[in-house]
Length: 67
Image 1 (cartoon, one colour):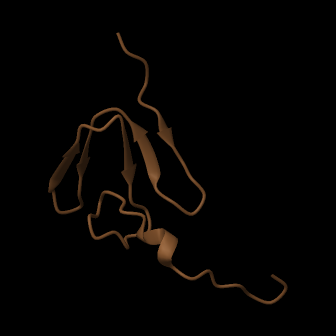
Image 2: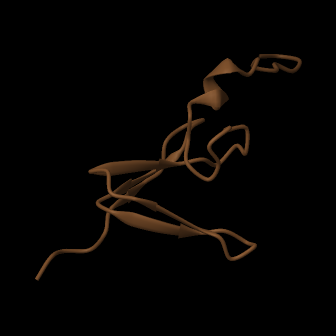
């Protein structure tokens, strides 16, 4: 029996899911990844959405007053 699936939250980046994973989109489409760890996009900038392609790294950081 295997343990629970580990999902890691990252600052300003994707969700990291350990093990093979199937991601079901809002439209019902299914994307399967057999990778040891899969990065799930949370910024919606990825060209391979719902999988992360690190597009979040290319965005400019906006700073406000006092930053």
